[in-house]
Length: 175
Image (cartoon, rainbow, N blue to C red; front, side, top):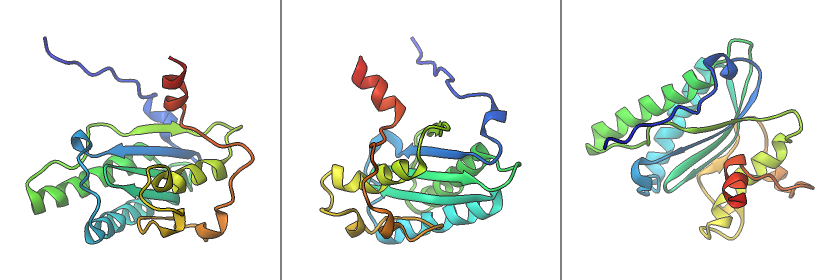
């Protein structure tokens, strides 16, 4: 029997406009490929280029060995989140395959459009704390592959009143 993916993505129009998005994209088979500073730097360059082209602010990012977390915000009514993330994945995967002959990313990224009651600061904090939660460093500011292109993120490392957890983690914990 052949495995068939179920499309759980919202209609494309839901990803257009001045909204905030939490995105996670994982490496193929969760192989830790994002540990080299030069490689992460190259991908960060591709990410910022795509953000400029698609009019997105990179509020928070964290490259982990086997995945990438992003908090981005659309700057214009025509900002297209799917075009932005898929374009980044395509360019970075192509560069990686040219270099290594291997696949970089899993098929689809996880996305979450922030609701009005979700504080972006709490989502950013969640992203920057990821290497600490995984035991890769003692303090988030020590992780070399995290940051922001819109703020002095190291001054934003105060824990929010209410910690944020991705909705898919909340659902899986409830099962």
